Length: 139
Image 1 (spheres, rainbow, N blue to C red):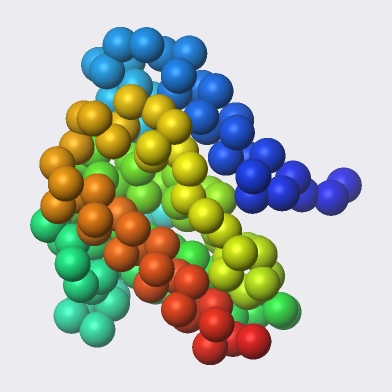
Image 2 (image 1 turned 45 degrees about the vertical axis):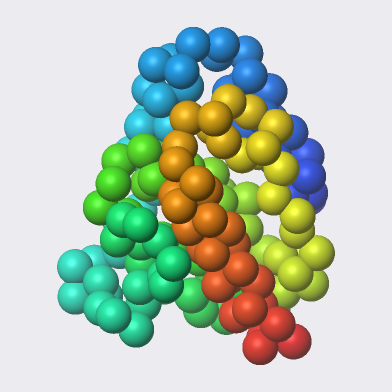
């Protein structure tokens, strides 16, 4: 069975988050999906894996296998870890071209952008940009 496109996967997250109108419920949803995301081993939480521009600690472990980019991410802030788990879910195991063409919508099309600081918002875009830069190197 073919995997859904990033846009279709993202639509599911947008619908789920918007269905939960209360920020507390959205926060619980993000925490729940973050629990399902594998953690980066502590020895991999090094400066060379840390995403610059993030207010809280965010680490990315990227690799390329069989024509796909593998994304593993972690954060020391729970809410950011939840949001990053969506990014990982959308971009992990995708072709470099799919990742490069991705334009994030779920933050701006949900209540998330109004609930996090501008610095954290910029940091999340730094995560996506870091993954996209890696994908460009894989082409």
